[in-house]
Image (cartoon, rainbow over all chains, first blue to last red; front, side, top):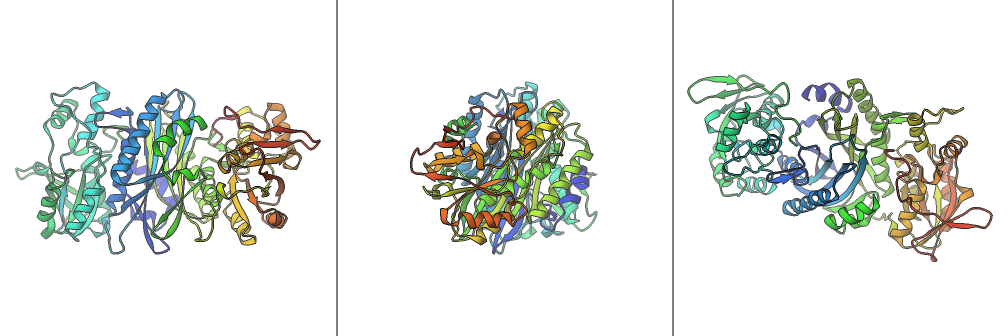
Length: 320
Length: 320
């Protein structure tokens, strides 16, 4: 995918706005700083523990706006239906979108629907686009990350990917495991009220924590060190990963984020996160270095560091 | 489709912004009048005479903005690729999008790509969202249409649908027939510079001219009369329609529009359109009446009027 983006999309579309390489593009329009983001959702199955493609499509787009520090305002949604999709399923998805949009405080303002013949789609695909506003003085982006920054995570990782997989593989757990799918904009507002020292934020979706830190290391040209033992992973996720031969660092999340913050403000922000329902599991997990720019090292807690790479293929397809 | 929109989408998403029932939603954001529109494109085949899914996805979204009187600024694009799509095809589509965007003066600012397994998609689907600005004093929308208004069309109809069908059915014509696919924003600017008397505009996409006039008659609760003999149709389109048992009034276009205008300004605007490369075939084709609100009558030129209905099914699937 990265190869495709670098070899096909960037060369054709290249412009200074696209080159921000962040979750949203922040553009200037008549003096307003508009944040724009778009995502296609092709998750399979359409319904999973803790969510469905509708909730996911709203939360995913709200989160991309929030990661730029933008307040979400408007959402558009386009639907590609495969012939034969049950109307009851569509109704359930659409009502779940409305609920998620209301919770995040974003208005669904326009939409479109196309139908493709049986066998030319897979039930339902949704593309959402979000429009938000960034405050005049705020700058949250990879290029602001600098050596010395602390890295905090908002909670335990891997729930979304394992929840999806549990349906696909017919796994069951002693305790129910729901996707972490949630709109993070209220947590982000809470963090930004607490401190002006936030340099960058990123939600941990496709490719998990490993992809997020590698992208930032590459785009900010800094080194990153992550302390493996500091990363929260709940027991059902750890167990399922062992069973399935997966590494939780690469498993997708839909309601978790990392933030890059001036070291002196990190403890205060971790404490603030813990007071928010979406950040109660927050932890300090690493730091930014001037050495090994572009590379992420994983410290295993007994003094051994290994390189934490991007996976060459997707660990789990169609997770969002 | 209309049933689906009325029974599933409107009840769930209902809000004053969505209820505008126009090609774009015009929303207020910190004093700016933002126009937002989104479309999914599932056209088959991906490449057709006069265009491809990439060009279509840009022009279609630019046109939806233009129909609200908005100047287009930003475009987002999300791609759903079926495994096995040739990289050369993707490159051609993406480069065609860039060209169409440059021509329309719109910037592609952010995007997303998902891949689905073979047999779960159909080569490539694209969803685009457009962001534009509407001038403070401008109001172009169905509710402004009033009895006495003249209806003008920007050119001959049916080219896009027949161009697509010619590839699907292996038809050939004496003269090559290209899709009319084009961005109409420059024509709209030209019209709005000429006159302040434009009440509503609508591009003639899915469902063709018949769908457009029926939607406006229903949403503005006015009667509409169309003069069949005044509607421009070129010979290859008329011939292909006869051969295939299609009615050109229902065939899709991607670079044609109608405008509802105060009667006294209509001739001036037709003349202005004829001076523009996308409006050289403009014609006065009908009028708005206070009688038979919600219904469109078609006058056949020898004194007989019939009701021009919406089709109950789609005449041609996957035309855009």
